Image (cartoon, rainbow, N blue to C red; front, side, top):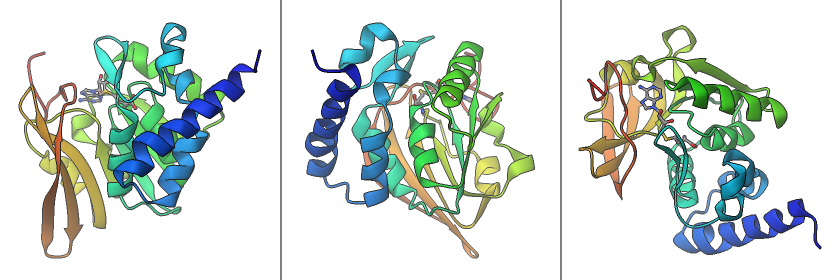
Length: 219
Ligand code: SAH
């Protein structure tokens, strides 16, 4: 029988070809990171064989690991460079943070559910992602002490773009955030320059809710 790691490596390669490259993702740094990060280790053992499928998967606490293509699209939209410091709101399984950590200098990631925060920290340590800094908190207020960030990615759906996050973005910084109602959102890309901010829509998407002071309240 072939070794597990080889099996998953093949599945990962197929995922990148069929789901990512074929849909127009061209940023080589993003493609390389997707080829490298062992996505199957970010889901429970029972779901490992589904980890490279074209869909999101549950990660416990009613939260999900995003579909691979969405991770690729959001990461490419952030236009990352290797010196960048990036803030992620919504660590979840930790997969998106690991993808970012393959590309940039340092990743700061915040999770509001304790068990997910703990699990993610464990996998980051196991895979030796020493450039990921984790925090257990409401991420809708960002991480003022470490700001400004070159890029911010919000991996949960917000009712609107929190101004406090925009204020923690460097001039020249990029943010990607799903904005909409509970059922569907627009994936918004925001660019900040000296004059202000410019936003564009990357299309529809569906994320779990961003819950917190500057997100959905009362959940
Ligand atoms: N990036 C994740 C996807 C996680 S799903 C991955 O790659 O697996 C969204 C996550 O956002 C959930 O884990 C949820 O608990 C978290 N979340 C929601 N509101 C939050 C908030 N205010 N601060 C931090 N995390 C939040």
